[in-house]
Length: 225
Length: 225
Image (cartoon, rainbow over the protein chains, first blue to last red):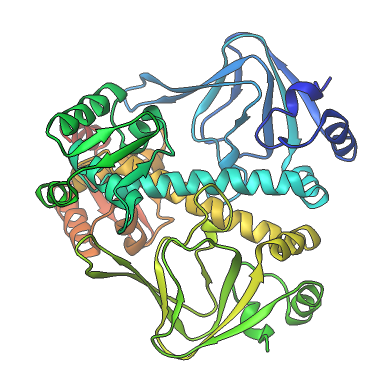
């Protein structure tokens, strides 16, 4: 049975209350699927024919490397979706093999039914578009940061980009964990370099902002990168 | 005036004929905008409040670097859209400044009206979802390839990934130009390294496929990378 209280917390259904969601889902064909610990859910390379939303439990995404060794990519927990950005597009296959970590219940919405849902309920359409667009924007940003080799270069680039031409204060939209992910470095390494830049007098770290003391010296870090 | 013959060739409207598109667009508020050569169309950082589709002419996307120097990013021609992946999501601002290269006509569909169009006409919804998902998948793949430093490593990784465990023939889904873009290298450099690998006897290049002669030696390239 779908648990609407949990499902309304899922990114794709947020903004709907349980009654609205139950009304929506009544109009399309859906299915509940159960898995026990270590059951295979989907294989990497399998075509994505449905939106799976985890209603209970957690799953892990894994890849095999060329020697056959299993590499864990990430854990995904209720109420998130599986491979949401891979339902449409030219490469609509699961990028990883997905296995249950414990007792798992999935809501399965076939691709065609999901299209109907988005056409019927604008909240779902907007949620889904925001989700995959934010993902695209994050990846595009991350690719951009990869062109700077050092953490100092990445930080300088980020601060120059966010501060614009007239201000010396950057309001932080990202946590240090999110910034570390964007830069492709560990959080402790990022914190260490931020600390260095503060001790060198280039920046002052606040709780929710960073003040740039010496914009010229900061931009020189970019040239050295 | 909207030119339906041209607009039906745009990625977001493909699959509709001129009459169907004209019927669709009649139900929403749209606007035609004209620009002369070198007119500014949008500034980098401006919020994306509409879908712009180029009906006539071409535009260029440019960024300023920190010294104020203009860097050209790309030209976009009719009947493509501007910044299609930036209408939704957390960072829905134009990533570049857009300027007309010649006489330009744009179809402007406000964000809310575009949502209505997608809800009304499934073809438009599917086209748009396929477009932004393909973009996400391309970026995700490109990030993955960036973890290999050398072109030899990137090619070896691509061929091992595409051939799977049982086959030694890779049907090419990408042109050499697309592969070069995916790897972040120039097309001539890619062609040179492919030629080297053929001369060394690891692969045989066909017109539409690549045959792997020595899978073991190919996978050793990955370890050396």
